[in-house]
Length: 96
Image (cartoon, rainbow, N blue to C red; front, top):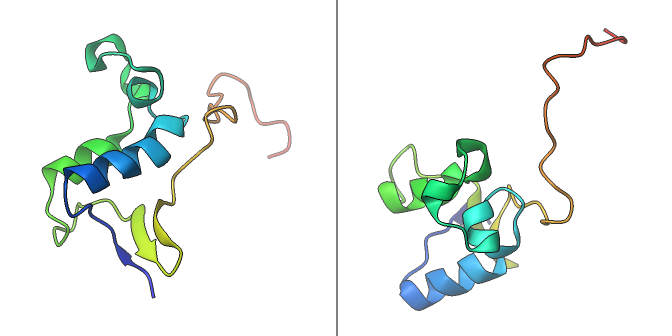
């Protein structure tokens, strides 16, 4: 059974961030230790911010943080060496 995940304390939250967020291509500040002000909006993961802003029962609490029989995880996780795919808005789609 899958349910929303929210760390029960700071230690558990730090462990989750270390295991998932610090290795994820979606957030440069967590991954490389940059200050938030040094990152563009597309280099910051909104999921992390939303977990601090909303209660787990709030409709805007991220659905990506889940817990199941395997334990807690982020379903939006992308290994940092894979990179986040960029959308090319300048080239026409030749196969459309």
